[in-house]
Each structure stands twice: as C-alpha cells, then as structure tokens.
Length: 145
Image (cartoon, rainbow, N blue to C red):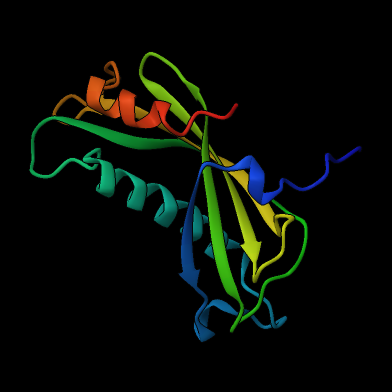
C-alpha cells in the first residue's frame, strides 16, 4: 500500500490549539487513538460555534456526523502542544467534508490527519436537508484551494 505524505500546515485554512492532558496517554505512553477523534470534534465544533453554525434549542437544522477517518503518521504524547488544522474539501447539497490535520508542537507535517463528514438534518425528522445558507457561506471560507 502506498501512503501519501503527511499534510502540511500550509494546506489548512483554520487552526485550533488544543492542550493534551495526562489522561490522554494510554499504556503505551502516547495519546490514545480515540483522543484524535476528540481533537477533530473540538476543531469542527469550535468553528461552528464561532460562525453561528452550532444550533441551539430543540428546533431547526442540526449537523450530524456521518463518517470519520484518521491516519496516524507519528506519536503525540502528553505534555505535547497540539494544533489542529481545518479545511473544507467539499460542500454538497446537505453534507460537508472537513479535512483535518493534527500537528505536534511546531512541526510542519501532520502527526495525524483525517476527515469528518457532517450531514445537515431536520432535528425533528432526522432526515437530510439543504445546508442553511449562512452555514454554507461560513464553510465556503474554509474551502481548500
């Protein structure tokens, strides 16, 4: 299997600093694989909160996770500083694919990278609906070149 090289910081449009915690390490002395998905979720949620795309209240449109993937290139361990890079690869009718890079300390190459797909649904029916226009405009600012 041929692997593509790790993404670089310049490949991303937005960055989120995240502090590793002692409890993130596993018995092997590095950040456990499930924690990377928490990094992904935090970066996307922070973007949505800051751009008004995170719904509040019981009604309306909700982005739900439909798919995630993570590839690991290098270890990260507490107390490393982590920066999560975020970009949008594709905006569809009702879905968006985020691409994410997890960077250790000040390294230029990602220690891990992956993607995160949200499908926008009507909260009551839990059926796909078009991405709201304000969310679509915010997502467009993160589109990869």
